[in-house]
Length: 198
Image (cartoon, rainbow, N blue to C red; front, side, top):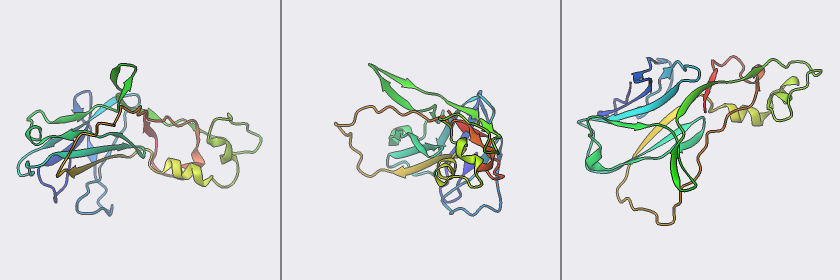
């Protein structure tokens, strides 16, 4: 479980079928003292949840806002009120919540393998709706590099709120996680990227 020395009492873990995934730490990674970075092994087509708990000595005098970012997109933004912080069961983010017609729907997080193509010669004709079509050339387009950069990264950010108020003009927005089309292996350049969230 990810624990930040600078923020004692806050714990975060990725859970599949009720079991926390084994975490690995890159001891050479350079992150700030208020950041914890861990790696987990993605299980193809497995639904997962993000579990987080607050325990003593975490300050319980203010609400906390959490922002879950998956593959570069903010998908969940729960607010935990002070009296809810220390719930012994903890808290869970199951996936983006959106309003569809008159109902609220949760789109569960799921690991999905990235579809890699092996197009490498100009004679190959990739589908028109894929990124890989441009990978037949020697260079990978900057737009594709930028789109792939956050893929495979789950970020949980926590903020204290001093004066939270409900926004009466806020309506439920549709929050979908975009699934990548087929991607050229050349675009990954040796990164250990194999999965995304859908």
